[in-house]
Length: 257
Image (cartoon, rainbow, N blue to C red):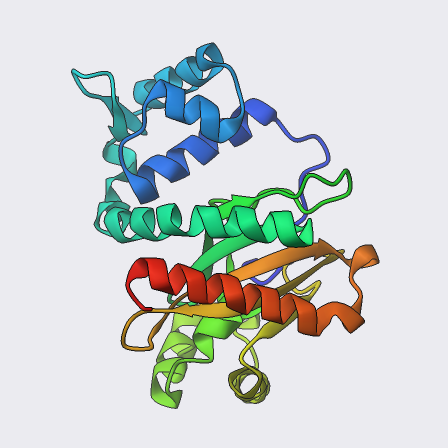
């Protein structure tokens, strides 16, 4: 069900995970070389080449004459979103790395589409106990930090449309309590940040702030994810201030400052 917490499988298949991550990159961001794929996954070029070859075989990717890989027929549905997501991700990466350097916790950039939130960039902390990369993962928007931040920007009629009952006819239990959600979103609007304690994944606390374009519209949420055993509420003000600094710097790079 869409509203269930996500828990990594007990016996994760690394090769499958790598292939799915490459497919997500191709779908959201566009062209990719073997070297770029190897760097993004942290694997050898030979491994990246084998993964891409299998994606080509199954029509998830195609290879151009210049040896560059692109989304194949299976992934073509999302080609319209590549350019904006790619630009946003590229601009955000240095700021996410800076956040990890400052806070030593994993950092993410997330966008919303309808009632879902997708992590489009993720940089892991170097700590042994850390929240691993969420890049490419999709969660119900109301269960993620960035999703809540972006839902909080919607006028009431748009929020109603996102969670219209008919959209949940097959799975009514997945639809959130709108009155409770409205109250929570009002608090987030007043505070200017969101805190998510275990709503998307058990044992994880995430804190985030919005990233806005030149007219003030929220484009994405930038956040840090912390193992709950290490989260200290006394540090919340510092976390929000550091995230806000990163968001303003990213906005400047995007043309908002």
